[in-house]
Length: 248
Image 1 (cartoon, rainbow, N blue to C red):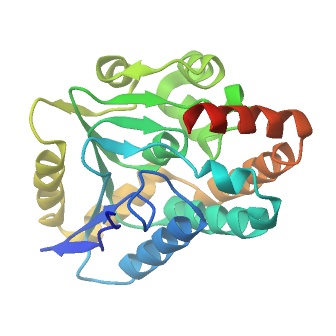
Image 2 (image 1 turned 135 degrees about the vertical axis):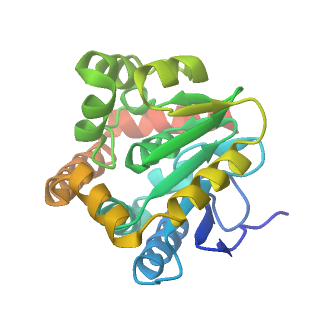
């Protein structure tokens, strides 16, 4: 059994692993809560100037934990944890980079829209199958995806649910840089570059580029409300149960 690595501070760069605490490449309510705490602590820690998100070896993140989708007793805690984490990420004041090596699926992909740079290895793939599951996007991606991919690109990506290879993801604007070697090494190098910049100028410039985060938080709340309604729909639950059986 593998376990979730703790955040690691390298100089002024905090490296955070996106996974469950029992070592699965998914996010459950405990993982969301842990990420929210980590971002909150990093926001007020002057030693942290940049955050790098990474996945487990060979896989960035396969999405949410299906078992929690199917267990109504966990929905309230799950919704609260998801909301807190994405609100924290949307309002986080410091640069966030992601290094993707392998698959980024569902929430494992939508989290990338909040990152300032996404660096991916050659074999990485990206997919958001929410509509196929009877669900809606999360993390304010109904705003961020059209901004980054254009409306047509966002519509195709979310509504068709096709898997994007790394070249297509870069062409659309989801990925900023493709590397042949280690995406993590390149992300850490970019983070070191950023950490050397004048802190106030860097944070102010990023804040100006990000714009009004209140709008993002309002959309997160609305998306999560729709997501929660979908989890109460019998047809959606049957669809999720069938997918879970196939994946078992």
